[in-house]
Image (cartoon, rainbow, N blue to C red; front, side):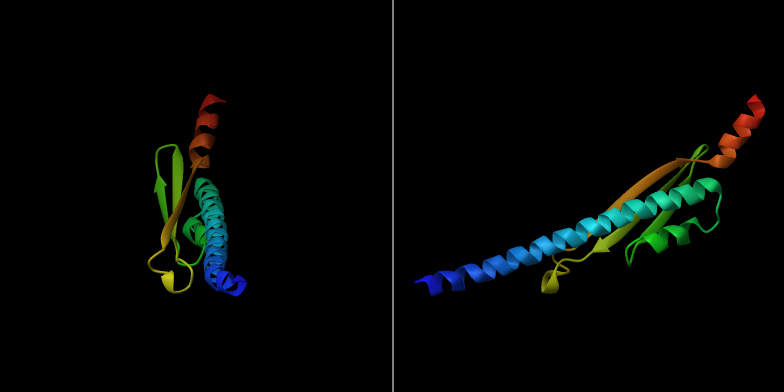
Length: 116
């Protein structure tokens, strides 16, 4: 009887373990998206022309980076796919995203020189 219960419970435990591992991988990818958006926004705020490549270097594989400049700020959005575990990869795939906003330094510097 114990063997039958184990045979029924073991696949459920394996599935649970796979889902927990996938959740950890997805959380790590989300953190990388947040970091990439932050680094990209900081680079774009400084006026670096390669802010997109800086953000892509910090982002997970397959990520897309968008830079939007406003009058006084710059916003960087990073989106990346996170496929599900194993054969369920396409069915359980999620799209992760993160945004960061930074004040443009060229605008802040211009305002400071006008005041002083």
